[in-house]
Every structure is written in structure tokens, then in C-alpha cells.
Length: 302
Image (tube, rainbow, N blue to C red; front, side, top):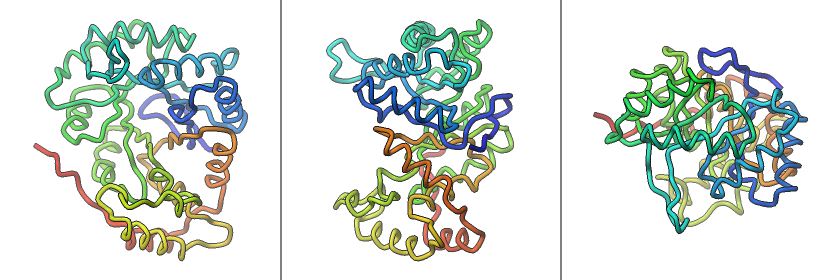
């Protein structure tokens, strides 16, 4: 599998990563899926302390035991479950981050985290305090690099201009192209895009008919989604699928380093890998995609 550099670091990350949130709590199956991902050449695993009340990190930790040197390990911080575990609150304070990283390290059974990401962000946050916490963790060796997971333009601009983030995780796919607005900025600052939601909740997978609902997707109605998907299906060539078009399109962008794609089991993992290894899209297909899938801009700006 091809690899790309993470930001301005020396870390080479596989173009397809495993988003671990979808793994669930069946430990044996989840570990089996992670091992299959590593065996296939995937080296980027993305989890968060929020997932399954920390159980996700524990499973990842068990899965990479003895294979830590093969993994670029990423997790996230900033959300805190309440004592009743029925909701979470937002806490990007330095105090919380410095405590939460220790808990993540314990659950992941590792001495360091390759990429520690702020799991959200608001314009009201004391971002200087958050950045100070991350920088302190880098100096102490608990984390190698840090980034953010956010789609808020004001938050993104703040961290790009005032911190040493190496990545921004964003929801990005053929139906959600707003992140492209920031790609030139990221490239200028040598910041990587890590994508999530690559197949738009299954709407851009081979199972799209069963995923299409009356709710549509984002600002698209059910009918609009259907029309766009049918047009995309018409531009396929050879053994390309809707799934492969969706993944290959994202990888056309230099700003993108990896696609953190979820998989509940090995079968779903292999579907993603088969789509990745399918015939790449050509320039004519790319032009047609740009005609079919419109680019919009974020409304939230100063």
C-alpha cells in the first residue's frame, strides 16, 4: 500500500487507515479486524478516548501488543463522559488533557501516542491553554505530534495560524466537498488532511440503495442523492465501483494523507481495500465528478 507523509513530520502513513470507532465491543472480532488491517499494509489506526467509554482504546492496545513498531497510532481528547455515562461534556482544558493522555496511554498499553488530536473545538475555547498542553506533552515524549478533528472554519484557522498541528481530520467525500476550501491553506502550512466519512454513511458504497433514506444526506434531499449517485454510476469504467470512485476521488488531492475508514469486521475491511486497489479515476472522470458534485463553502467565518 502506498504511503504519504504526515504534515511536516517524518511519519509515513498508509493511504487507507482504519477508523476504529466502528469496531464495536466484540474483542475477538475487533482484534481480528485490526490484525487483518495491519497484515494488509495499513499502518494508521485512529481511535478516541470517547469511543465505547474507553473500551475501544483498550481493544486497540491489545491488538497492537507486540506490533507497536508497525503502527502509527492516533487517538483523541476533549470529551468527557459524565458519571452516569449517558452524555459527554466538552473540556479542552490543559488540566483535562494532561490527565486524559495518561489514561489513554494506559488503555492503549503504550509509552507514546504518534498523533494526539483535539476531538472538536469551539470559538469560545481558551485555545492557548490547549496548545500549551499539547506542546508540553510533545516535549515530555508522551506524544510525538498533535492535530485537531474539526470542521469548524474558525477553529481550524485558529490552530493553523497559532499552533504546530500536523493534521486536521475532517468529514470529506463526494457529497461533502466543503473541506476543499481549506486545502490550499493546509498545503501552504504543510498540514495533512485525514478524512472521515469517506463513503457518506454508506451512500457512496455498493450498498447505497439500502442506505438511502428519506432524510437524504446533509443538505441533499433523498431524490438529489439518488440522482447524483446514478450519474456517478454512469461514469464508471472496467471494474470500478461507486465505492472505488469515492475513495479514489479523495486520494486525488495532495492535501489528503490518509482516509480513516471504519470497518465493523474483516469483510468490510476487505471491501474498502478492494475499492482502494481498483482502477484509479482518470482526468475525464474527474472532470465529470466536478460537474456532478458541487463544491460549497462553509457559512461559519468571522
